[in-house]
Length: 194
Picture 1 (cartoon, one colour):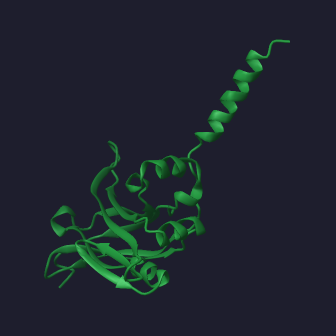
Picture 2 (picture 1 turned 90 degrees about the horizontal axis):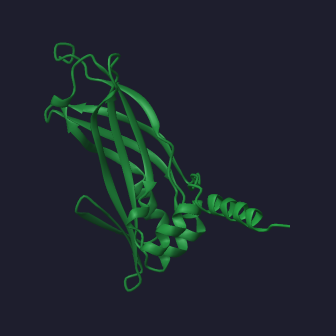
């Protein structure tokens, strides 16, 4: 009996199982999201609420001093019947969650600002509520045009140390991400805003 084809097939099956992309751990959900127009500043602002529950593996990693980077991503697209959809805006906000053993405080850093919290739950609560985040100037949008807005939150595994990046490829505990939430947005015409 020739074992080589059997061992080659077995090796391929194990390799394919190992290289399977990680599935969402279901630990992040987009509860609600919307875009608003700020008329005095002529900006389009995002407000969103997320549910973020870290797995025990990630809780342990943070408590041991490993900083975690989360991304809130926004993409705004305009449908075009004659060509591919146009991406009007593609932006993100980065959250850095860390623990400092000396002060026994959790820190959340975003956009050059950093806040300290006494517990991990308080730090996570601060990361899960986005209010009035500037997505783009109003001039990027045409009045009375319907845009598709996609929003999600995920752990940025590219910011993990290399050994953890390899683990994140196959272990959903190390790769939490929400599904994309889709909603429509349109800018009212200037005459109807008055």
